[in-house]
Length: 252
Ligand code: PGA
Image: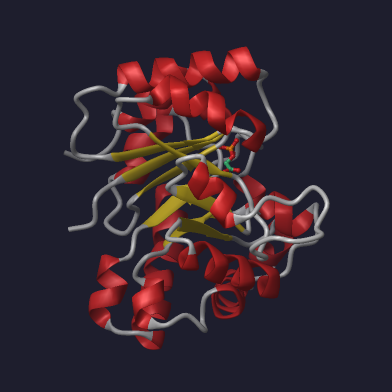
């Protein structure tokens, strides 16, 4: 059984006090929720403050990005070991904003994934097509390319420690959520890609989150799909009650 996993990607939002307050509220309101994994992804400068705010709770946290290098002359970068040092369990890699606004390639995402795994972080690796690609009927091809370039070279042991997030770019921050069927189709495809590249038991074990305009009012029908194992939530993760409303949509 795949354990549901709901993650909140705060992106470049909030200040220190706001981050601490939100983290503390989510930690408090999620007390007693045993059947789901929960994690928040604050801006990296607030990770240490968030660590204090969630201490003693079962709310995990991680970073939105990291360097593929362990240390050195890389101004402005943050290594996997630094994130581990701050108590991070997860790191989001290859988010579409990094791919399409900041120019990250599949090769970059691949190197970062290896670096995260080497440090024992759990990477949430994002894939997803752009609107023009979907309209041209290229969704399957794009997902396959991103999977092959970002994850295809991992060993079976390594892929088993990865979480995949399917995030159609046209649904991110737009309020235009994929229909449960559109999302389920791609999740099923991803499981087939995993089965072809690795094997059926790996394909069944790996968690695949959906992301793109998930909110409390649409979460339950997305999470009810057989192959959707959780959500990567942006905007709706910035309010504790809305985020917990999404968590409430997890199938019991
Ligand atoms: P959104 O963002 O929920 O605001 O659409 C999702 C994401 O970028 O992970």
